[in-house]
Amino acid sequence: MEKAEIGLIGLGTMGSNLALNIAEKGHRIAVFNRTVSRADAFKAEAGALADRIVPCHSLAELAEAIRPPRPVIIMVVAGKPVDEQIAALRDVLSADDIVIDAGNANFHDTVRRFKELEGSGLTFIGMGVSGGEEGARHGPSIMVGGTEESWRRVEGVLTAISAKFKGEPCAAWLGPDGAGHFVKTIHNGIEYADMQMIAEIYGMLRDGLGMGPKQIAPVFAGWNEGRLASYLIEITAKVLAADDPQTGRPVVDIILDRAGQKGTGKWSVIEAQQLGIPATAIEAAVAARVLSSMKDERLAAEKVYGAGGGRISEPREALLKDLELALLAGKIAAYAQGFAVMAGASKEFSWNLPLPTIARIWRAGCIIRSQMLDQMAEAFGKGGAAANLLMAPAFVEMMKAAHPSLRRIVALAAEAGLPVPALSSALAYFDAYRQGRGTSNLIQAQRDFFGAHGFERIDAPGAHHGPWGGGQ
Ligand code: 6PG
Image 1 (tube, rainbow, N blue to C red):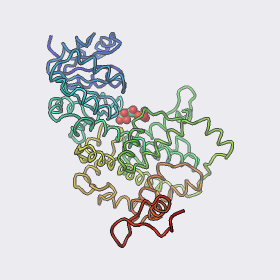
Image 2 (cartoon, rainbow, N blue to C red):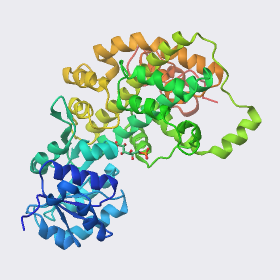
Image 3 (cartoon, protein in one colour):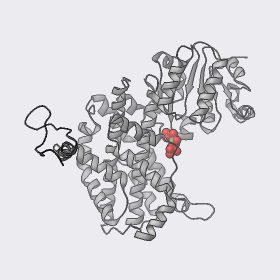
Image 4 (cartoon, helix red, strand yellow):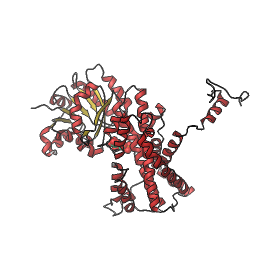
């Protein structure tokens, strides 16, 4: 039988869709699943693509079915299952074969796995895949970490299955070992911030203006025609317009306000902290999800304090304009933070992450795809965003036009008692970032007072101490 070009383990939703995508692009693919019968069922359900699918009933069979050197994609739950699969694959694969972890792995695990496989002859690739089910099936954004040589060997199939932005594939090699999974983690951190800020704006429309989902949906749909055009704004409009078939009520109104999370947002914040790069909007978004899960405590606190959420009396049209611009400004700040974290990691781990390429492969396929990412790609490409996206000329212009609206919205929200943690963190970040003389001179004085930590002077070099007379 003709050998397959590639293998895939894990026929869950993402794995199945990725396998169908690979088959559709003309590649023969061998598949294996822990529940062995699933592989046969998968082929049976694959319709016209079935001819290119080789169901395997053991890992040995999978290895046998693929033409060496074998690339094998693992698409299983992140964590221990990945280690178990790798261990099992080591018994059946041979030198030069490539194991590709396409799950949402913690990049530290990817670095470890990469090292563990070094010297075994097998090569490891950590591959971030974004775009959800639809993306996996019809074109995800693909972020690859590993050796450049291993990338060259899988580049053909990965670029073929990736999303395309104006014909350019949204798949790229981003650096060694954990680089791809790190970038995917930051993608998700930004995704958290994006989603949280959209939810905050929704809250202002719902609670501040008293608008129902059916009235809010066209607002987002309208914004999707402008500078905010993006997948997340587009689906927000669709979500708000949808009705629950059981009750006939808007679906959003019957969904419990408790957000789940699988960990990538949290990892992005942990890494930002480790690297010493402020990512306040992302941090606020992760914290907001945690707070959202404390439903019972929130209900109890509402009884004690009363709910916030007073009405906003601004004229609706003017407020809508401000909300759109506030979201734009908040979004720019959140992306500036995400890219700054990647720049920091690139230095720390000597990855040489190509920021313009990252912006380019996020322009289509992934969850945070947006029109603005095209402008970011251009800004990073020109080098103007090297220090921070907020310093790129095109974004300076946008931010100058939009931050007054963000300021008004955060102020109105605070007055009304409406929580906007990500938007207000973004604003505080912007204000602190652009403040040439901040207030940490006082912190330095306090540190020196109680701990003799010393401080720098504005008028003389070296370390100095204050006239505290021996401290406390
Ligand atoms: C993507 C998504 C994807 C997934 C996350 C959601 O880029 O396709 O980010 O990876 O939706 O797992 O994460 P949470 O469950 O943490 O929200």
